[in-house]
Amino acid sequence: MRRLIFLLVVLFVISAHEAVAEIAGRGSVIDGDTIEIRGERIRLYGIDTPESSQLCDLDGQRYRCGQQAALALADKLGEKTVRCAAKDVDRYGRTVAVCFVGGEDINRWMTFQGWALAYRKYSLDYVDAEDEARVAGRGIWRGAFEPPWEWRKEHPRGGATRP
Image (cartoon, rainbow, N blue to C red; front, side, top):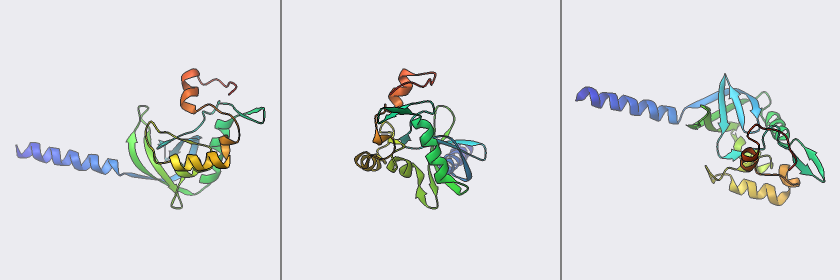
């Protein structure tokens, strides 16, 4: 019985440690809401950005808004150290985390700049930042776009199409 209790305590401590694990290092951008640090893929928690091949519309002109989102994230990260607080692991095995550069929440920054939407299915943490970006007409809010989750349903292979 003591062994069982000891084993349960050890498992609890390990799982609690993993839930608050910090990942830090230089971040490489995979797409607008995914980075990699030291070989570990990290999905930014609570936000969703246009897919890499997704097109949006600005004044009647199509542009690759997913690529623009990724470029905005890359510019923000630069060569700085990124610190991510792990919250979960998604179905693709990626760590889901809130990440920071110089103490600034980059998930919030991407949403505030208008390159990400609050992913309400998983979190309401960034709804206020999305509202501010929409009102100010920043990022994808400057024109027409399809929410990324809807776009993925219609384009399971990721092909670029008109918004």
